Structures are given as C-alpha cells and as structure tokens.
Length: 416
Image 1 (cartoon, rainbow, N blue to C red):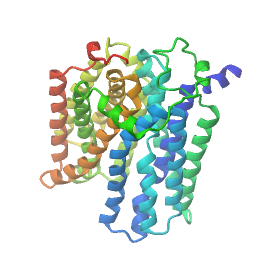
Image 2 (cartoon, rainbow, N blue to C red; image 1 turned 180 degrees about the vertical axis):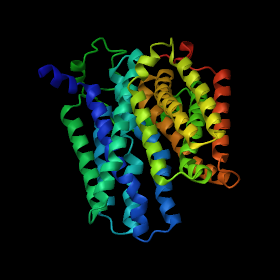
Image 3 (spheres, rainbow, N blue to C red; image 1 turned 120 degrees about the vertical axis):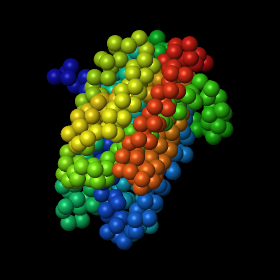
C-alpha cells in the first residue's frame, strides 16, 4: 500500500492527474457554451465571436505565459493558471447575459495554458530519452478526461439550471486541481532539472524554491534571444501538419452528412472512436520511440503516413472506409503531437522551454482560427474540398521535412 501511495504521489503522476482534471473540466462545459449563448439570444455571429475571442487571446498570451513559467517556476504558474481559469468557467456558468459570458471567456483566453506548463514541468524533471514516454502518458491521461467530460456535462445539462451546475462543477474541478498541485507537487526551476542537476531524484526537487521574478524587460530580451533560425522550420512543419488535421476534423460532420448521409449518432460514435484510439496510442508512444535513433525519423514517418491517410480519406468511397482510416489518422496525430513537443524542447534552450511551448501553442491557435474558415470556403465547391486542401498542406510539410530534416543532434542549441 505504501509503495502504491508513493507511486501516485510521484511528480509525473501528479502532473498526469492534473492533465486529466484539466480537460475533464473543460470538456464538461465546452460543448454547452454555444447552445447556452443561443438560449440567451446570441446570434450566430455573436456565437462565433466567443470562439474568436478565446482563440485571439490564446494566440498572444501563450508565449507570455510560457515565459512567465520559465521565470517564476512551473509549480507557481500552474497553480495560478488553474485557479484563474476555474474562476472564468464559474462566472460563465452563473452568467445570465451575453456580455457576462463574453467577459468570462477572457480569464480562460489569457490563463488557460496549464497543458503547456505541465509539459514543460515534465521536461524539467525527466531526462531527454524519457520525454516521448512522459509526454505520451500525459496526453493519454488528458485525452481520457476529454472523453469522460462531455458525457458527464451532457447528462447534468439536462437538469433544471443544468448549465449553471456544469459551470460551477467545472470551476470546482479546477480549484481541486490547483489545490492538489499546491499541496503535493514539488517545485522545480528550469535551471535545476535532471539533465543538468547531479541529483535526479524527486526529493531534490522539493527543496527547490524558485527565486525567479517577473520582469517584462527580461521577458522581451529572452524572446529576442531565442534562436529562431533553428526553429522556424519546425514551427512551420507543425503548423502545416496540424492545420491539415484540424481542417479535416472541422468539416468531418458536414462532409459525412452530405456525402454519406451519416446520422448525428453515427458521427458521434466515429468521433468517440477516434478519440479513444488517440488516447490508447498515447500510452505506447514512448515504446514506439525506442525503435528510432532520434525523434526526427519517427516524426518524418508519421508525416508520410498522414499524407497517405488524408489522401485515402479524400477518395474514400463509403463510410466504412472512413471508419477504417480514422484509426491510422488518430495514431498519426497522437504520435506527431508528442514528437513535435519533444523536438521543440530538444532544439531550444532549457531556460526557454515555457516560452517555446507558448509559441508552439500560438502556432496551433492560428491553425484553429484559419481551418474552419478555409474549410467552409472549400465546401462551397466540394464536400471533399477541405480534405483535398488538408492533403496538400500535409504534403507541403513532408516536402519541408525532406529539405529540412528534424532531429539532427547538431541542430541542438547549446545550453547557456
């Protein structure tokens, strides 16, 4: 019993638990936000502003919050972001007007970066060869929360005043998350992690006190000091690969209905099936990475498979083939997400990990903002238009990978 207790109290296990609670709380309320806004009288345009406001704030706040975690420490920044995000969802749940709902999106847009901070923390406390494994485990735990959350939120939403209950429950879940991290998660500064510190045990992390202060000038100088010549290609490759998948997912429901007359129930089953495959795959990414001498080769093979899968989806004759091809696509996206994170951390300096994770999140925010618009325009010409554009975007990322191979150890920036 004592060994089991010590196992679940390990820093990595605590961070995985935090990731689970994080996406569990978010996914409980996210599917209900737009229907509740419409019930309060919001037009489709105003409802769209909700998503755009959140995405725009995330775009600009991600690097700042990431660098802030570099400066003040992961534990402190994680606790603050979880607590303030919870406040935002609590206010949203209790809101009775469109204006209050819009204001409630601001805390989440600014502070909802707990996933990136958690990954930076995991990178700080584990050696490089274990990064693929710990990131895969974290993504799997988080995805499991994302699978359970909508079911719980959907059932509660059917109660009288259900949206308010879901909002308060999401808020309390974030508060529980923050309290757990405050009570049990050991502090670690970016300059004292297993790759540079002689003592690699979690016990040494408990005595780490941080000692960083928030300084805007220092933050701006650190952004300029990042070696962008060594990172722009990876960010562009990640953008193209992520954009192609988001483009497919954003138009999947409409394409399935128009091309194959799929019912909402079938689409729901296919979506859950895809999420379950991604979650299961996350548990085995570390083992898969052991068969490669560097992460760049695995990432390259996944991009090749992504191009082939998206093209196959474009020419699929029926819904059965779509269901079959969703499996490799889910595997590809799960592995690519882990490998992209590992490559970003490996190519950057240790003291810039949080900032790089923030910039990486900003890149994906742009993809999430562009994909629905591009997909909508493409579907005006053909239901499979988004898939064709997505295949082309993935092919461009593959060409760039051939021209600029990733994972070369000589590209690793020397630690300062």
